[in-house]
Amino acid sequence: MRGLKTIIFLIISNTFMTFAWYGHLKFKDYEWGKNLGLISIIMISWGLAFFEYVFQVPANKAGFKGDGGPFTLVQLKTIQEAITLTIFMIFSIIFFKTEKFGWNHLVGFGLIVLAVFVIFKKW
Image (tube, rainbow, N blue to C red; front, side, top):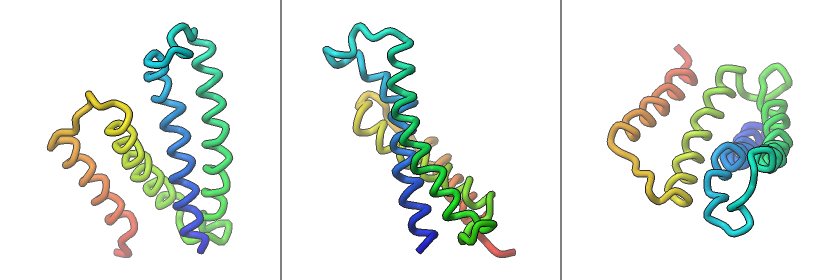
């Protein structure tokens, strides 16, 4: 159960972080965002990042083997990176229609999935 909670919280936290890091690139497409200055954009992004931490910290706490969770530190980081790229790809496809994923992106993502397998495999 802690493993599932960890993964769900990591998905939520990475969604907030993706919007904090890249969402502001679309602000200019909206009337309210056309004249925002850099400080305003940073403050909005910090506000979003706060919610990233609200989920990221409990995810790592619940998932870390040293705190009774099922994952090692390296496994937690690997899961987080795979989730980050998945969320980023979905975000890009939905919000940045001009961005296209080529075969090299898919191969690269496949290699990251392979990395997850290698890190989780008991050798």
